[in-house]
Image 1 (cartoon, rainbow, N blue to C red):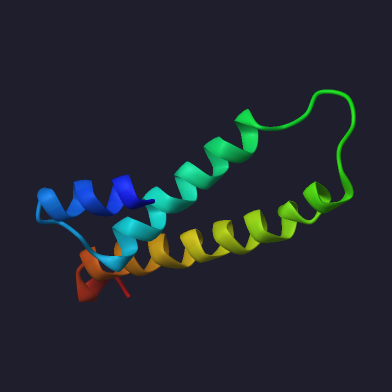
Image 2: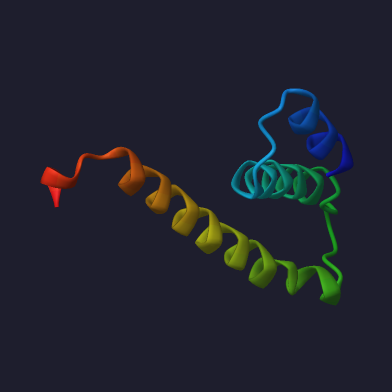
Length: 75
């Protein structure tokens, strides 16, 4: 997350939406790469709720972004 924030700041495009999307992507990659093969610990089962909340938030951000791009006549 720190690398994402620094990269966005260096590119001068740091916004909360972009930081959230990159952080969610990084979180999903870490969760997938650290998944155990045979036994799933109990605490790991609760990650699905955090992932679901992140994906719902991503959907909200994406819909807001699309609606801001579309012309007002479309509504």
